[in-house]
Length: 72
Image 1 (spheres, rainbow, N blue to C red):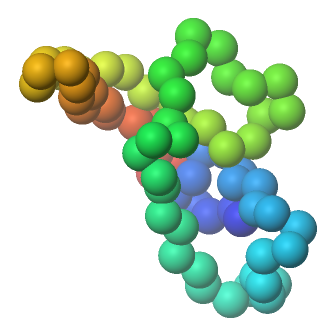
Image 2 (spheres, helix red, strand yellow):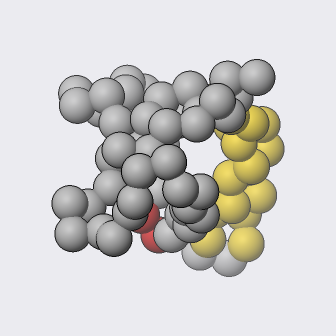
């Protein structure tokens, strides 16, 4: 579990990840794994609350700019 003052909700990591307690970590998001949803996931992990502030269409791609709420 990753918790930070800047996160509103904790991030759940794979149990096989080599994460040590109380040591800083970096988190990378894979854009192809991001989903936009109306409701938070049932387990309450790995999501952010925000709003779509801009949409751009580039051929067959849609590019979303989102503003996310931070804990600070």
